[in-house]
Amino acid sequence: MTHTPGPWRPVGDAMKVFAGNMTICDIRGWGHLTGVGGLGLSDEDARDVQHANTRLIVAAPDLLATLKAVWLLLPSVANHDVEQRLRELIEAAIEKAEGTRG
Image (cartoon, rainbow, N blue to C red; front, side, top):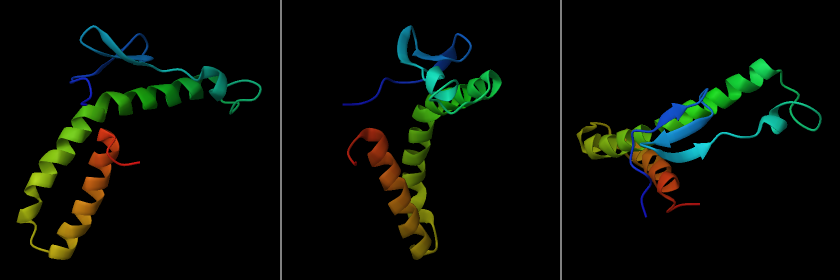
């Protein structure tokens, strides 16, 4: 199974993420960021956290595509040890993003 194709975009004060007219996610957690039992953040700080989460979610398809492109370029790396370590890091990230690794 693959993810919904991008581009993904923030909507409504950057608290929702859409692809076309389909909702990818609705950024929640206000009660966990503010108030009693939460992190006790100010409304401004909580908004900043939610906007940062939204930016990361919106970037996810591009980040995955970039990792896959870099994966294909790795054979051109001159240092085998560097290439191997990059392969390990990239492979782990791609597998995590695609749900093939825990």
